[in-house]
Length: 278
Image 1 (cartoon, rainbow, N blue to C red):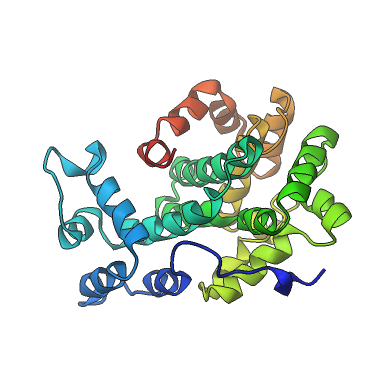
Image 2: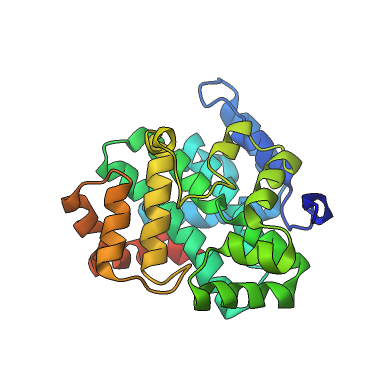
C-alpha cells in the first residue's frame, strides 16, 4: 500500500507553524519576536506553552498571563520542544482506546523524557533537547495508521503484543504498510527538518554501528527499549533481557542497572511534562 493514501493534514495543529518554529535560529536577534508571531497563529500550541510556563518548575510563584513573558521564561529551545509536543499530542490524543493510549501515546511521551534523561547520564546534555523531540515523534506513523484503519489497527496492535513481534512486522502483514515508512513521509508532508529522518521512522531495535555512535540515536534507542521493556509499548520483558538490550547499545552495566530499576521509571512518570500531558 502506498504511504500517500494517508491524510497527513488531519490534525488539530498547523504543521506549517511547527515547521517554522523548528527552523528559527536561536541566535537571531529577532528569534523571540518570530516565535511570538508564530505562536499566535495556533491556539493549541500557545495554550500548552502558557500552561507549562505556569507549572511549578518554571513560574516561581508568579502567574504568567502573556506569551512574550512565557517565551522569555522558557527560552527558545524549550519552546521548540513544546511546539513539537503540541503536534504529537494533537495526533496521539485523538484516540481514547486504552491500548493506543498506553502503548503508543504514553510510550512516546515516556521515551522522549527518558531519551533526554539518558543523554544527561551520558554527559550529552546538549543533545538532550533533540533526543526529547525525536522521542516524541518516533512512533507518529502508528497514530497516522490508526486514524485511517481504526479497528484493523487495534487488531494489529493486539497481534504484536500477543505474538511478541515488532509493530512494523504486524502492520506489514495485516495492512501492507508500516509505521516506519508512514513516519518518513510525514516528515516530508509536514516540512520538518530533513535530519529528523535519521531518527523518526527508523527501526530502533536494529541499529548499525554508525547509528550507535550517534548520541541522539543511541539515547533514543535506549529509551525506547527501556520503556518497552517496562511493558509500555510492548509486553513486559524479563529484567535480564532489558539489561542486555541496553548493554548492546553501548551503555555500561551500572547505568543499565540504574535505568531498569523501578525507581527510574517512577521518576519519569513524575516528570512535570508527563503530568501536564496526561
